[in-house]
Length: 71
Image (cartoon, rainbow, N blue to C red; front, top):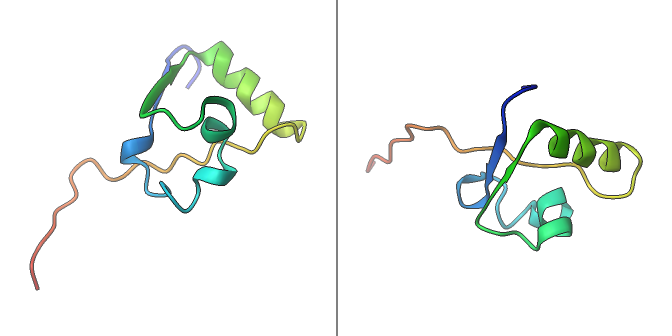
């Protein structure tokens, strides 16, 4: 992942709602719809979480091609 930015899209996170209170994005930025962190910023977030200062990033993106089918 080094060298690429990480886009955190809270609207596409599977854990949205249930995991927001314990996610670094919510703690730091009050859960914006989308945020982009470059590698240096992401390492800083990871270091803060590793040190116990903030919760870890809990992003779990939805599958790109989810299909809703009626039963």
